[in-house]
Image: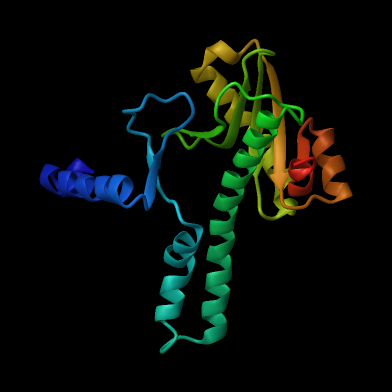
Length: 209
């Protein structure tokens, strides 16, 4: 950012981000799991789901109503909303894991808050859950469309391998994989289980709550 904008502009942007984060609580800075607080890999996210959906998916199509075909704009908005809903699903899945762990139900007791992981080499893992007592680590992928889960199973395992290369502490732990979607049909469940990936729908994650 310094190379593109110069140090003065970077400091100015940093000031705006601080105000939005600390004073108005409109955004929050998230870090990959196990990253130090001052790591440069942090990302800023809009807290409010409606505002996030408006800015990411709806604002541009709505502003173009006067000079673009409505059906084209609706299609664009639908595609962008799908991406926004995907990020919201990750947040929801993490919250459900934490609530289940707090209540002592489910199959995974957390020893710290569940978070995602990413780095500069395009490794991206939606959820990483850690159970220190049982030395288990679970890597998760979340998809709004359950049909996409099967195709991401191999990529999830490769990303987990690269994660473990950076965090060798967990190499001797039991490694688990989970695929999460709002609803998962019987065929998709069977295909995921054949790949040693645990399928979990929102129905599964809300059971007993």
